[in-house]
Each structure stands twice: as C-alpha cells, then as structure tokens.
Length: 329
View (cartoon, rainbow, N blue to C red):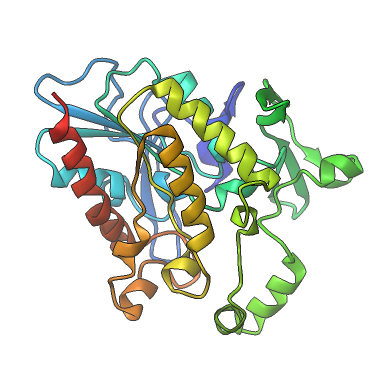
C-alpha cells in the first residue's frame, strides 16, 4: 500500500487519509481505494447509531481485510454484507498493522459504535508484527527508513503500551541501536535465503518438500510471540464483552498445503475456549476447493487475496455471521 494514501496518527501510527479516492497501480490492472471521513476504506460514512432495520458487524484486520489489491466492493467484508439481508459491515482494516494496532483502532474509533457482532480477523503472520517496535520502508531514493509503531509489552503478565505517540518522522536503519534493530519487523526469518530461493523459482517446491513453517511462534503456548498475541486478543475480547468472532486468516502456504497449519489452529482453539468467544477457522472451507482454484486465491506475484479469494473467504464467513446474528434476541 502506497504511503501516499496514509497519514500519521498519534495513537495507531497511521490511518488512511480521510476522504481520499485514488486508483492504485497493480499487477492485475489497478484497483480503486475510497476512504471515508473517519480514515478507513469505505464508500459510506461510519455512523455511531445503527441504521434502523439493519444489523451491524464491525471487522478488524490488516491488508488482507482492508484489502490491498482489490476495490472496496470486492472485499470479503463487502461480500458478506451482500449475502445477508439487512446487514451493514464496517471494515476497519488497516494495511501493515499487527493485532496490537488493530486493537488500538477499536479503542480509538469503534468501541462506542453500536453493533451486533465484532469480527477480529488476524492474518496469522500478525504474531510477528506484535513483537515489532519498528516497520521498515524503502523511500523513493532506495534508502531504508524505519518508522516507530505503537507496541505492547508484557510486564508481569500485564500489557503496557509503548511508543504512543509514535515518532512522527522516520529513522534511517543505521540510526537504530542494536537492540532496536532486533525489533524491526523484517517479514520473517532467513530473508537472504528466502530471496535467493524465490529468485531461482524454487520456493514453493522447497516449502512443500521441507514442510516449511512460516510462523514458528505458534509452536508452543509459551513462545514470547504467542503469549503477547494471546494477551492482546484476550484483553480486546473481554473489553468487547460478547458476540465476538475470531477468524485467523491463513497464509497462502497453509491454503496451498505447503505448510502445516495445525499449531496455529491449536493456539486459536485454546484461546477461544478460554474466552468463550466464537472461533471461525476458514481454512477447512478453503481446502475444499481444488488446488488450481486455491492457487487463484492469490495473484501471480502479490500474495494478497484476489477477488476469487475474497469470495471464498466471504462464503466461509457469511453462514457463521448469519447464524450468530439470528441467535441474538
């Protein structure tokens, strides 16, 4: 997502520029981004009170929810709305964020909004982002600049918020201390090796042969990443109080079966049982499609969902949303 579409925010770090409307170049031919006055992608304003006669769902997530690479009306959130009569869905997705910043989005913009259901949709990779204190960005000169992000840390099992307000201006990578450099989100392990394998065109074959694990932070309930992610989600769900769906969005490696999903699935099952909220895992539904169809759920180069991928997510999520809404008095 182009930084030209985003502006600084003193709590979250950034949001979309309110009321911007722009066509973004993309390998698929480009897509339209339309933002409302609150600073989130939507073709309409976000109003505190429900529309009379309508039920309302709030959805939170990162670029897979926002959603990079497709226009607003093609997103799974908008497709869920179209599948269920008398429903309005407010999409608070924000590209590049972790579950920590998504929780802050809810606190800053949505906790007082009338609603019937909340969907928290963390891309499973978000577990790395909650551990990060900085995000890198390559500017127009090719220099890497590093932006501070708000983050939580566990202090004797209590969440403490740091970097609020985050530094407004970026740092050059060499300006960080050694400790700070370790807290930059680099997008996973073994970056040089991953780039070399991708350049050779052997990435998917190698992943399938080695059963590559892209998110080892879920391997145990006691990893630092999961303990922090779990604490953030637990505090968030308890603050909402009721009618919450947690929907972990799988990586393409899980959808295309080059990586094992069982460990992250186990962590989210344990958490949902503890919190008494609804867990909706879309992966079993996605795996019912043929391998050729699943490959079309992402673009040729961009790993974000295609319109076909969003339709599959919507078809998985809509029945559980409708079931929970209909069960409410």
